[in-house]
Image (cartoon, rainbow, N blue to C red; front, top):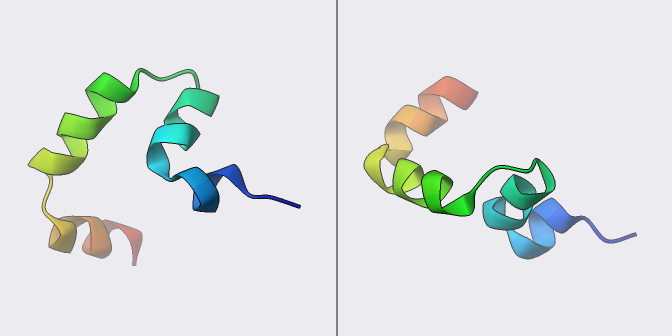
Amino acid sequence: MHSSFTDHGPVEFAESRKVQPLKILPLFQSVNMTEIVQNVG
């Protein structure tokens, strides 16, 4: 079984959630990786 999230990345996942990637991409760029890690873990 293929996992679209791991194979295609967050963009594909965003499309599957019917969210515009154009709004998602700049969001990832504006957020620091350290903040994402703290929020996840």
